Image (cartoon, one colour):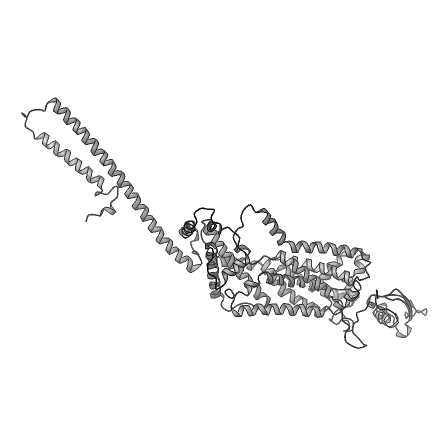
Length: 587
């Protein structure tokens, strides 16, 4: 069956070149037969006619050769064009099949990503180029320009209409990833602060995958499916344990045991320590904060050591529970370094502020660092508020969970503030820790959608410097504030507070009435000279008590039958309140 002209190739027997060649051969054979069959007596042509015949033959050969070359060129061009069209048609079909597969599995095949056809990216770039007359047009630059937070939120909104092509594709990829995540996870999500940070981590991961897909399209790299991207991120999260949080909990537990052993495994009465813990002497011996010892004795390590101590079992249990849940969630989401900064810097800064404002009190606890972590959480939520409560990204149940996280954070702040009114714990450490944590959080916590906006324009050095300064402004301010407050503390006398009424922020006398468990005066830090009976019985008979205002009172105490120095030390605050004219250092 003869093939059509559209199927002929350069080497096929029915091509125009072969047909022309066969016709020429047939004509030559016919001429030879005619020459052989001519009679011998036939007259020979004359010389003139012979020359004319040769000339006409030469012209015919030239004409035939030119025609043959033209036909060959036309045939080659026709065959090349048909081959090109056939290749384009094949690639177009494979591209459409690959695109369909990509949309069903997250913009790529998870099994053969290294051999994935590049046509979808090429077609997207061709369509983007077709809409822009030159590479410097706005549609081309939209792939590289930085989108604002407002533009991102608007693009993720359900009512979003017209978007730049590059952003529209990323938004579509992100929403598809969110849908796949809902199908995979279902309703199995952790509650509380872990649930909030898990949700933030999922949003960040899906945005990063959308940005990764856009980058691969732009650089003509093989696509990576959402499934493979999510599996790689899950493997990384398995190794990202909150080791810093575990270390803090472990060291605090050890120090709690050490402190109780120093106190001879005895819990002080509730009137002295309502948190079920040791005495002030045991806390001071293990490293509690004391402004007098810091300033006048040079024991600056007491700005750091109180972070690992606790006033009692109640204080320890509440702080370690908050450290495990809040610190663990922050560390798993933002890494070890961010968690360490959010804990240590606010804890030290809070202790410095407390030492300045409340020099007459001793204090312990990891509460300053925990309030720093809470401040970091508040900074994280404020930075990502719109994405946490956007309807197109979060359903009603998710938004309710996020509101409950805010409630529990507020409840934890309230509960620790109440504990800050008890002895050995102060709210200035809490307040300073929260403020430092908020500032450090704005610098150390990465904004959720920072990788979604594309690359900024090259050469804009002023914007880069400005953004860097704004990014680390909170951390810079925190460091400067710590340096300034440390200088103020070093210049103080270690006894006088610049704010007399500040004591009531961290202390409330309890319970109401004359017989109180604890007071908010300065009698807890008084000193006295002791006098022992000359009979040799070891009975303390008199003391010279130095009152908070500097006056000295000679007080007989023989009737109290005190034989131990520790018993006299515990009784000094009562003697102060009973005999001193002023119970405050600065009245």
